[in-house]
Image 1 (tube, rainbow, N blue to C red):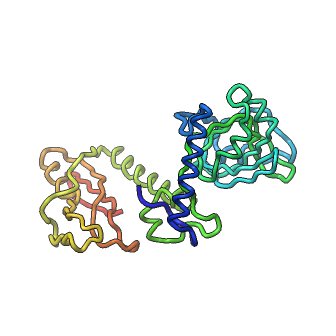
Image 2 (image 1 turned 120 degrees about the horizontal axis):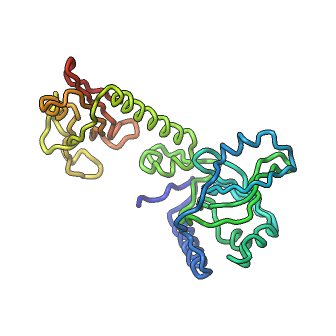
Length: 298
């Protein structure tokens, strides 16, 4: 795994200390008979769905309908016998209202000191599963009043600083998983890209095109300008392998009587490690009887 994303002023040694502390929490959870990496959690609702459904819920009002959510803790506030977490799932963020009496009663058979363990053994970045009811606090914040919870994944490394965020462009490109966690706009971009790609594929398939599998790498240079970069020009000293545009082998399929074929594949280009240069890009190639192979770069 690559090194974790660091925030301004956060050293490698402090990250190692944080990781060691969290590994100790993992060991403590296991000693308590709790799985810090639970296999499953039944999800019946999502944050954005609940925000839309209970828009008109008045402050102080509660709906006695049980819901189950799962998401990542992105903020924690603990006040004695009461705590508030912000839980982020793939649709948005919602507040967790964590009352000691409620949790101790609901989880008495599972963990006799569940609220204390929740306060002491969870961190920002952990993935949590919760079960409870929907309520709006006196201050007007829609929340899940939690009865039961389970730690689904214990995060061993911290997220980037809340205020500075992930600002290093190189890290954003090299550690996309962190970028997707902390930047909602990036998650939306990835979602839209996937929808566009599936829409193009569906459009062509509905018109009789058959998707085929073709090689994407070759050992010899080909194309209009067959000049691969020498291995020494890459910062990773990789042995460069030439990328094969999907249109090359699509032509062969066309002559083999597959008159309507399409290919969506990654095309690799070793152009250096700068964020401004694209290392790979998807290419669409399709053929039909009245058209020679056409390749579109997306």
